[in-house]
Length: 185
Image (cartoon, rainbow, N blue to C red; front, side, top):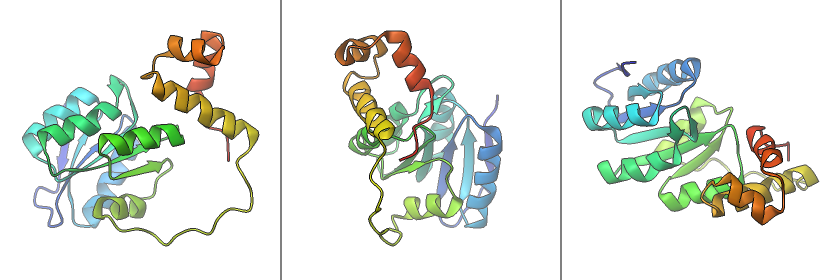
């Protein structure tokens, strides 16, 4: 599939948007174009590298889970190709551990899906939305368990077998847990 490029003369800069969800790509491209950005779209890790070499983006918005790999490799890879690029990571599988790994890799922001275009623009420009008041409700036990599993999974370099050994858990059980979305906080 050929990457889509829109609005070639964006006044605010060029954005590479990488996600394997076609409707999300199209909607986010339209929203970013309305904000004055030129947008190039990619649906895979390989395609993102190809588009980045030709398009030379100033910004990138990268989904964490892509069909042909893990979006986290794009964070450091794109920063190697384009040293000044600002990379925002977004994911439907939000966890504290993966957000820390993204930030260490050089991402400027980490956004859980569903994501609003205004949040993406704020992350790209470095604007900080007003600080939210602390929650009166602590994380649920299921969410705490999820966060712990995600932290160990990232420490094991996303190796399911090693993570299962460290957690004293059957590998298939761990795979089922990792395939699900994070529980509500």
